[in-house]
Length: 380
Ligand SMILES: [Cu+2]
Image (cartoon, rainbow, N blue to C red; front, side, top):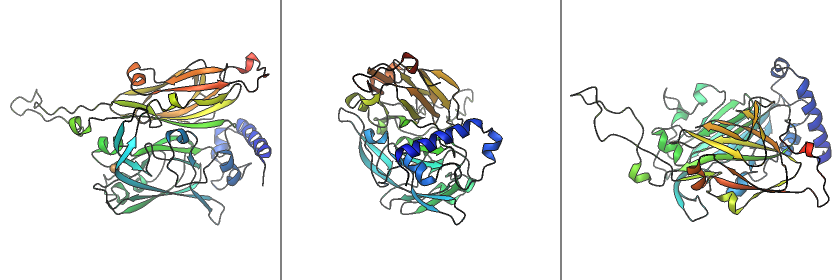
């Protein structure tokens, strides 16, 4: 059994190795086993939860990483089994002011659980559509997999529409590494997604990224006037008397009334996220806000490195605002700077006023701590 210091050392060595590997060398590695660290020790370093059936609160969601039930193939390949249960008509608290959303959920929460695997793992996700539900559902994961595992009903695939009372196991080898959204893909998709059937799926690099404290943040929104302005998007019908015009009365407008990160509007205003000056932090950021074209993440008082889609080990650029369209995602890495309270929020005032606003509380490492100014800034 390795202690934390040993694990850190292994991670450091592994991270160093990753710097000298070329892309071709890295991709040529076997899918069985990670170089330099066992899957058990890697899972500990990832803070994988031991409570796979937990319904995390929006506070717990930050650090709730579900890495599945782990077993091994005879060739040593890691197998990860997950179970997602779909339930409709769930009453989900979505603000600090008492708003309740009539949602559909994977495992009882919006967003659904963050599932976390390592590139090359054999992944099996069993989706159970509860018998009391009224609709078929599916699981569509982004990343690479066969069409039969894509969770789309077009093409007649069994996993594209699981009837109430049914189940389906989505099975594939996890690739490539990166951050991905997952969501239901049954039509009308605007309803099936935006009732709450979505979450985050992380495929980690085989060689661990440099060790940092890590958070999951999924940006979303809620349409509370569902029965009034609901409806699915489709081609507007043509006026056959005058084909240069559309038939009147067929416009479908959808909009969000509440905006959040991790499901609860202003959740991190009431519960600021604690950081320690000089420590490095990594945020897995996914945007599942529909009906608005883009969402954004702004950090006050600090700058961060950004890795688009999480599909690289070195950042694309340094910024303090990143903009993501629906389904987009990436990795943020930064060093906590001067002590104090700092906002995180969308840089669209409508979104911030309606809930997408939180606080980071940076404290000094110790009262006598003297952090050199050179350490205060985004990681290089
Ligand atoms: Cu669905």
